[in-house]
Image 1 (cartoon, protein in one colour):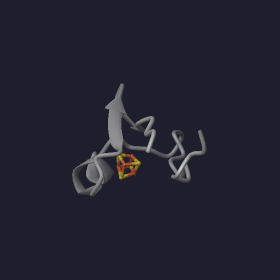
Image 2 (cartoon, rainbow, N blue to C red):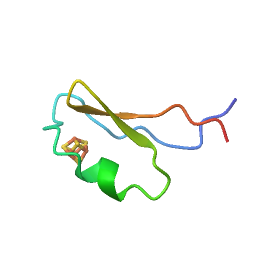
Image 3 (cartoon, rainbow, N blue to C red):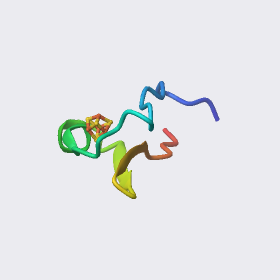
Length: 43
Ligand code: SF4
């Protein structure tokens, strides 16, 4: 299935601040080991 999102998170630059997780309108961000990850969305 085709992905609908572009992955823009550079894991090497993520500070784990959780700002993206808190503001994402579709709840697409999850934190793993204090690094932001995009959830696998199948829409
Ligand atoms: S948690 Fe999200 S907003 Fe914060 S540094 Fe990482 S990617 Fe950027």
